[in-house]
Length: 336
Ligand code: UFG
Image (cartoon, rainbow, N blue to C red; front, side, top):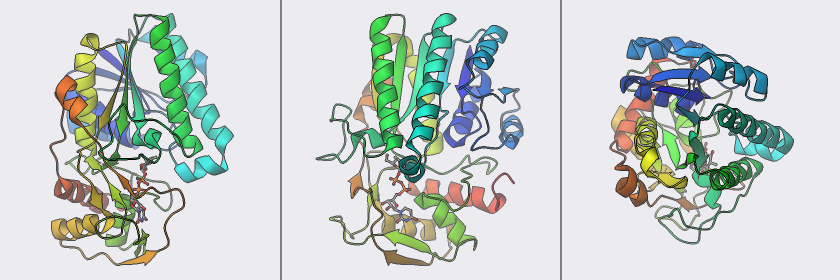
C-alpha cells in the first residue's frame, strides 16, 4: 500500500513514517519544510533501510499536490502538516487559519478527485479546552481556547461533514495528548525552532547546558504538588497508534475520533524527577508565574483506542526521558 504522509519530515510525521516503513508500507512524504529539515529523509532511510519518496511542496498549492496523486496511486493519507505553536497562533490567527484549513481543504479535494477516501488526521487534546472532569473521554464537549486549537476543531468538523457527504470516506481523527521522546536510535527527534515552548525539549536543553534553567510555570495549581499535570506519551507509541488506526480503518464508522494518551498524568516536578533519575543529570529549575492559557490538568481516557484499535501506549516516563535525552545528546543542535 502507498501511504501519503503530509508533514512527514516533522516530529510526529517522521516517527510515524518509520513505523509505516517497518510494516512494509510504501511512503510518499509531502512537506514544505517550514518547520522541519530535509535531513530527516536521510535519517529515515538510515534507520529503516527503505526508500522514501519526498516532495518539497506546499499543500496550499493544490496543483502541486494534484501532481503527486498523478505520480502515485495513493491508498491512504496521514495528515500531519500544520502549524502548531499555540502562542504564535494567538498573535497570527490568519496565518494559522489560512495554512491549517486551506491545506486540509486542498488535500481533501484532491483525495476526492482521485477516489482516495482513507484519511488519518493529526488532531490534539487541545480540542477539549478546559475539561470539567478527568480522565478525558472522546465524547466530552469540545472547546478551543486559541486559534491553533480552533483550527484543529474546525478541521475535525470539516472532516465529519465530509464523511457524511459520501459514505466512501473513512476518516479518523487522533487526538494526541503530550508527545515526547524520540526514536531509540537517537537519529530523529523533536527539533524545535529557537527556544522551545514545550516542557521536554526545554528540559533537555537545560540539561545539556544550552539554556540556564527551566522555568516551572506555576506551583499553585490544584494538583498533588501544585505544578501542571499532563499525559505525556512516547512519540513511537503515538506513531504506532496511527498504524493501528490504518489497519482497522475499513471496519470503523465513516468518521471516528480516538484519544491517544497513556491515561496517566505526571506533574512538571514528577517529569523533572523522572528525567534526573533516568539520565543521572541534574536539572536546574525555578518556579515562575503560571503561563497564560495553561490548564491545570489534562490526561486521557485511552480505553476507546484499546477496545477498538487494540492499541495502548507501552513506553513509560523513563523511556520518554531516556530517548529524549539520547536524541538531544546525539544532536545538540537538532538537524543543523
Ligand atoms: N511547562 C513548564 N515550563 C516550560 C514548559 C512547560 O513548566 O518551560 C509546563 C506547562 O505549564 C504544562 C506542562 O509543562 O503544565 C506541559 O507543557 P507543554 O508546553 O509541554 O505542553 P502543553 O500541554 O501546554 O501543550 C501541549 C501541546 C499543544 C496543545 C496542548 C493541549 O504542545 O500543541 O498540549 O493539547 F495544544
